[in-house]
Length: 142
Length: 418
Image (cartoon, rainbow over all chains, first blue to last red; front, side, top):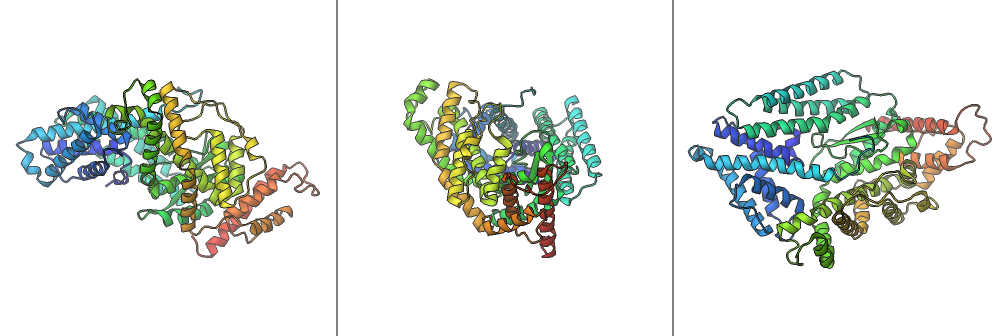
């Protein structure tokens, strides 16, 4: 496993690799899951927050991904709902990892999870970029 | 698939460049090790891109292409940084003593087993504060001094700040401060709920400020900025605790009185930063240069909307509430590594030799050498009676300091500290 995968600093890369694993599963090419367990672990860590102590950055990244992918019927309006959604998505990921063969005939779950992972990858990248862009740059640089 | 082909080509070009750079002559192994790790990163990315075919999901392919481009954007400047580590403008004498110091501090505090590496290079930006967090290079301390200063050992204490960033990561400080900063921000917002509602045209209550996703989105930047500010403050304190007064001098040398840029959100205001450093120095028993405040002016106020500035104000206040805790935390980490404060008697012995224009052969630490160097640099009577025809005294002092560090390195190596 590349060193970068060992860290959760790069959620964008991790989510993208999880999307690739789900796509490979749909194409019947899956070998083993490396990114999906780490993503499930990340979601579990977020779930361990209370609805009052959720990191707002993580919450936004996750909620935007949920909203864009439609994996859950509607985006969360409260942190309680978001924590429940994170738990549901992690549960799905874990079920898929435990019994991948069960989902060969039920591809909708895999398609939704794949879409969520792609959106999570985009959402994580864009959040950090947005915050970084507020910093002043060199006056000659555009 | 055109976009995919472009992405593959771009990554291949990066790997080619990495291979070309690897053929350079590196003075220390760590630069080459970094290149090897980055090459593996790009090779993994290439493998990932090459596994796609016409059956692959287009959204997944496109996102992977985006990620691959993002990697190039982020890592290409780092390749230049590593390449410049071969340049003879760098003070190679300091590499191993700095690595030993980093290793002692990081490995005593890391939450998981790490192997410490150090790359000393030069930057064509007038700031030493670069490459703080490189996910693909865990355990690497990357110190890049401005190219015009890279042979100047007097700014070496600033490396303490960079080592601080690595310490922040390996000891998982973000996690440590997460909860307290969150609580501070929420308390401050609750106290100013009317102002918050007015600025954001919201109807938040103290109960909904933490539970309503819409409100979270509004104040999330405050949490983001205070985390950065706490990290930068921690790194300043590590620099002070490692290098004492010399850190304060080198900090002033680099950025006093101010520069013509707006205040970055991720740093405390310049005068606040100086006040915090003075507070830390006082706690650690580090002597503060006389009239230190007078060296500095504040930066241009930060740009931003009213809501941005309100959130920055909240972040600033949340930082001030934890400054004393950061002072204690930085000290505890250094004590855990058994690194002593710079010692005045040792500095004096070194300074006495500097007065004779002779490098001492038994200096005990980098910090003592650099503090003696600053005492000499600040002494306007240094070598007054010694004729130095056509040679700048400060140039001689720099050479003398570098030679002293080289002797320190030899002594440490002879003691078996490789």
